[in-house]
Image (cartoon, rainbow, N blue to C red; front, top):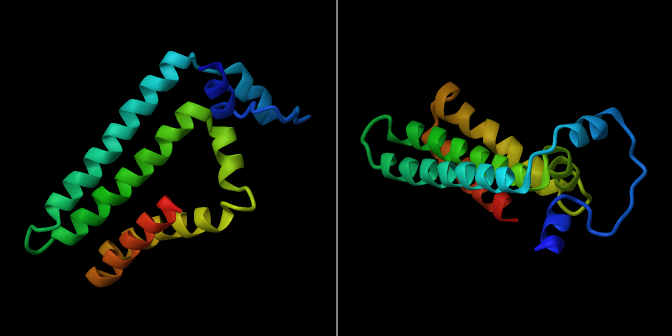
Length: 141
């Protein structure tokens, strides 16, 4: 269990000499392991619930796709936030910007914004659905 805590908190044996202000703030405002797990579970369950509810709203005639796009995007944001509880926001951002994950991160964040634009601004249901699919693929990548 201790090894899992170290890996998720970014202390997997690699040493870094980052004494930046963000690192100092992160170290000063740490949460206990129990609080992190509770935050993870709450955000993850909310994310899955939003995604499931969005899928149910998809079948409502008229504004169903717009509601689906908002709920699905909100679910993905909540799921992404849930992992920040386990490893901390700074470590999460560092891992998201790693060389192997940077492209998936850019695609996912771009699709999050474009989904909402397609649903509300452009009012193009096909594009909103396409961007939701791309969100899923980038999130799974």
